[in-house]
Length: 131
Image (cartoon, rainbow, N blue to C red; front, side, top):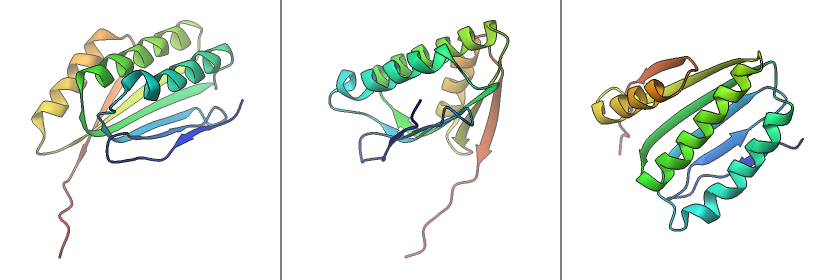
C-alpha cells in the first residue's frame, strides 16, 4: 500500500499517512471549499489501510482551525481507529493544540470522549515570528 501525502494549502491540511510506520498526520487548516472532494480520497485510503494496519497506529492531529464539515470527516477517521483497536492493534491519538487556544483543546476533549482509543494531549507553545 502506498503512502498518502498531500501538501498543505491555505485551506487544506498536510496529510501524511504512512502505512508502514502507522504514523498518520493531519496538520494545518482544514477549511476546504469542497469538503467531499478533499476528504473522500483520504477516507477511501484509510478504508484500505484498515485491511492491514500496522502493529501500532499513531494518529497525530495538529490543526489550528477546521470547519464543521472537516470535523465530521475527522470524527469518521477517529471512529475507524476503534475498528483497528478492536482487532488487537495498538492505537493512539496525539491531539496537538496551541497553549493559548482553549477551544481547540476542548474540541479534542470532546472527540476523545466519542471514541474508545487513547488520546494524548500535546500542548504547543506559540512561536511568534520575528519581522
